[in-house]
Length: 431
Ligand SMILES: Cc1cc2nc3c(=O)[nH]c(=O)nc-3n(C[C@H](O)[C@H](O)[C@H](O)COP(=O)(O)OP(=O)(O)OC[C@H]3O[C@@H](n4cnc5c(N)ncnc54)[C@H](O)[C@@H]3O)c2cc1C
Image (cartoon, rainbow, N blue to C red; front, side, top):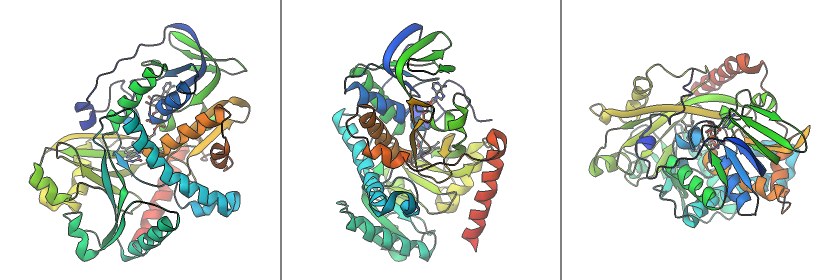
């Protein structure tokens, strides 16, 4: 089973944090206007947005701040929220779909602003390239570029043909690309820790090693941990793929899927630049996609795979290395210094799930970013806070009106069913 140790995953990020924060465990009974469960980007940004609007916030994190996907992801900050949002035209209409697309651009800007506003040192770099595995992908990129321009996207976008790919990647594997200078990459755990410091600075009370174990619902909520209780008027559930048994109905709408990353030894500037000459984040188009970039100390961080079994590979480095060598065979002599994985929260229709529990209108949630959460978590937090504050709930309502099916089969059957679906998608890729 995936490790649920309270320590951070053994990642290069955990080894290179630039601040050490420690928050107490919850002891005794406290009261707050809003209790937030989950100390990743969703929870932390809800805390920031609500604390700055004057709410008394108490945030419970089961392990350490940034322990979940937020502290261990690929660090790729890419435009877009959800996948193929045109599918939601029947529910949202043409205007609704257009607003979703605009939000997907705004979401990246929110992260940019967060980093600037709180001077968060997280190695933020701009520049990203979509990689085409097949000529068809290049046609898709051209359409995507035209659509972005029509939406008023103000960052450089440039299509690359096969012969130009050496400008962005030292690999023969790709037949084209789309450069986007409005997307980029960063150190995800340092971002989460910076946001935790910002939330605490605004007066939010953060608690670590304080798993919410039970919720007493009602107008006055009581959220229990092992040694304490938070009394609150509102609750936000922000646990994404790690929600487990706390709220089974919500957990049933998210499929946890394992994704894995390796970090090479430092390669030195010259060798690193041969792999990724312009220090961009890169990502291919397959269902079980490869994503990679350089770290600030010039390692290759190579991520990929999508495991639905609920079990991590026994040896993540051995599992991921051949994937890296298929892209960069020139790294055969390079050691892998770190290898780790985490759970992506996938929803059936792959649109982030924002809502309120139908029977408990004072319980709000945001989850299921489907592997594309760095920007979307920040957007979700802002939309939730604005709706809770009664400021403007139109963005929240736009997302909340889309229904999200529960995966059939409960916790046991969800994974095998989706594994079958994935297999089918991968077979189609080969046809
Ligand atoms: C390996 C990997 C690579 C990824 N790469 C990218 C990428 O490159 N770009 C991108 O945009 N997205 C990426 N993602 C997705 C992105 O990281 C997530 O969508 C995002 O971090 C979700 O944030 P969150 O705050 O909602 O959840 P999380 O960060 O997972 O936080 C949830 C927290 O809730 C806590 N929790 C759970 N239950 C309880 C409880 N009962 N009480 C208290 N606390 C509880 C957990 O301990 C956890 O810390 C990746 C994800 C993974 C796993």
